[in-house]
Length: 316
Image (cartoon, rainbow, N blue to C red; front, top):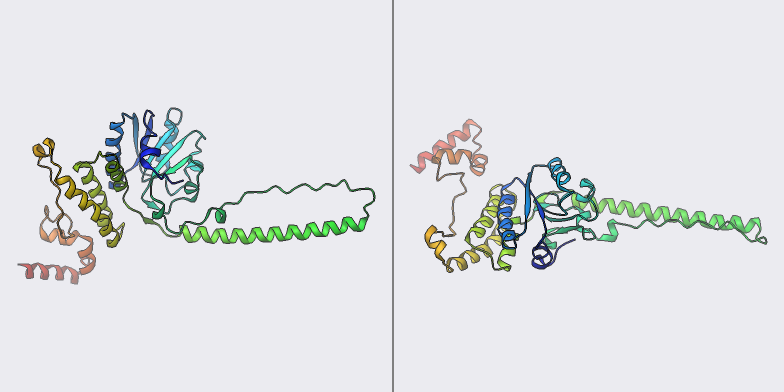
């Protein structure tokens, strides 16, 4: 289930509780973890932390701590699988999941409260309705075989034929429902993609709590930039996300304090070339090892290498 109010149902809910942070090893996860750690310190929430690379690491981290910890926060992991089934979790364990990987597992979306998703519902595209995916198993009523003495063999045969017809219709309806369910699940889960960065979601929580600063904003910017540079999101989504971050940067820039003066901390938005480490490498190395230019000029071929040197000659 989705958490509608992060401040009340997540942040304030964890006050005074011991939690366990499970963090994926990518850049967005690290940035999101740093933001969350800053927020947890304000509430004096005690926590432990583990970094995972896959399902086996997640299982190990859970089973090593399940006896002592009942609240788990999963950052960029666990969202695409049924964590209750995979981890064989007890009923008194609660998972808070903030995962940018998509699609989100349907069992997590329709959980009765043991799994709480911190992402926004509109980030999951094409989620099937609950009744199209889950169906309660109704036990067939046992037939009363105590027929009255006056009922004849013809009545019993007629009743049996009617029950057989109803059973056939029920099996047919169930088969059609299962075929439709399988199609919906396939259409929903056949493609993988990325939603907005988890660090941005947590920075918005920090802003809602009036605990944001330039350091947390920078972490959100780094997470979004990583998604864009590695092709996890499209340019249109990057443009939509960068607008609010730029507004936050302008607002925080006008809110100076002693720490900012001492560290000369400043965030400015400028258009830059999408070349890998061109401020640290030579121009040739940056062009050679950037994905866009390498693919565009086919630098793995002799002709591409010749194009690169011609470009460098034209640039002077």
